Image (tube, rainbow, N blue to C red; front, side, top):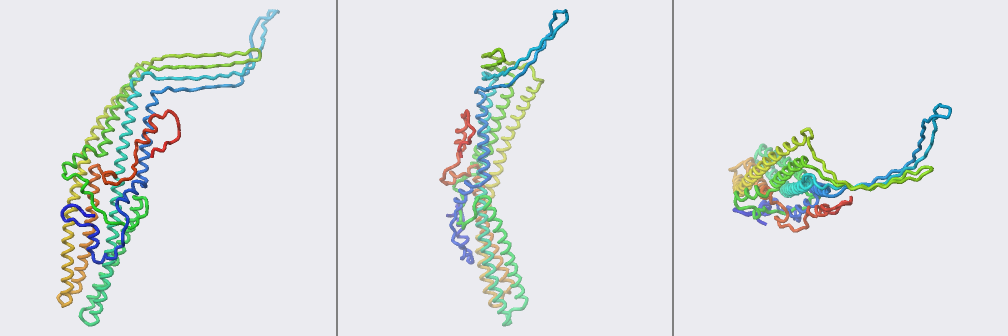
Amino acid sequence: MRFGGRGALTFGAVVGAVSWLAGFPALSDTLDQAIIKAYQNNPQLNSQRAVVRQTDEGVPQALSGYRPTVSATGSSGEQYQVTTSKSPGLAGGPIYPQSNAAFAPSTVGVTATQTLYNGLQTANKVRQAESNTSAARETLRVTEQTILLNAATAYMDLLRDGALLELQRRNVEVLQEQLRQTRDRFIVGEVTRTDVAQAETRLSQGRASVLTAEAQYARSKATYRQVIGVEAATLVPASPVDRLTPRRLIEAVEIARARHPNVGVAMFGIDAAVLQVKINEGTLYPVVTLNASVQQAWSPTILTEVQQFNAFVLGQVTVPLYQGGAAYSLIRQAKEAVGQKRIDLDTARDAVQANVVTTWGQLEAAKAQILATQAQVAAAEIALNGVREEARVGQRTTLDVLNAQQDLVTARAALVTAQHDRVVASYTLLAAVGELNLPKLGINIPLYDPMVHYEQVRDAWIGVRIPDGR
């Protein structure tokens, strides 16, 4: 796999160009495999998918406004009644007869209500719920892009830090050999104690650099586990994805402003806000409902058995006249929200445009950095070889050799870092355009389709079991 553009060079070639990285282990895991694992295992991505499934339920909830509501009631119990009355007696005085009765009343009934018209509130609520669902899917696309970019970055970070760690280890081996030769030359009187001390100092610095590189490698390995979802195996070199990005900056900007998921979220936000205005306006319209009820009652006593049956169908019209001004305030508030959402769309488009321009510049800088560091490595290798030869004939000091050695290590580390930045910048640009996804990368695996769950729940009238729409 090769880097595109002028000065193409594989990351593996960079590693191979470093003579002391000959012991770099044979690697097997690819960047595509890491991206697939992140797509399948990353908890943040799975959490956002669950959010989309929750948002899907807003559509059947809104659709329920088209359907009737039916309820059944029933009651039963014991009732004891004592009645005392007043009546004139035979001797002219009143008497107070008393009667006792025991009841066991029971009632069962069914009531149904169907809304026929409510100012189109139900229809607008359904469309608003669908807009919210579409916005949730766009947010999921944003999260997917973020996770895939994080996966590519974590992979390249670990690959870079592994190479830098091996580079520092090989440097320590070279410095150890340099110290041994300096001590031998000190014994025969060719150099002074100062030369030995300088070699010892550089060796100590090299060992400290190894410890720092080991700590950085451990951090990158932990980040890899967090993003990818599995422990890191051995890694293979990766190439940039320049072939998938637009060839011109203006094309990249146009695509991002039109199709970036953040722009999609803002656009669906406008739709939902406009529909909220219509929903609030619907509260000013009459509400027409159809009510039906069937009821059977029993009231048995000790002496009689009484029952009653009642059924009716009733149309009802409710005309709102004045609600204290709250309805009008909600309408004005919703209209202000529409204006805000339109501003948010402009903000989103400007933000993605700025991000594209920035990442485009970073990619161009990364390409130039590779050329510069390649020249730096070549010059440092020539300088080191020359200084070593001059030191053998006494024209250079041990410090000159150590400085040249350090310059070469620094140059090779810069080249490894530049190759890393080159790959990461290409993925970052693809994400900035809004097209970092598995199909675009040519990765053919079963994809998560949010429409599966949506279609499973949209027209569900009953049921509490969660469908397997994953």
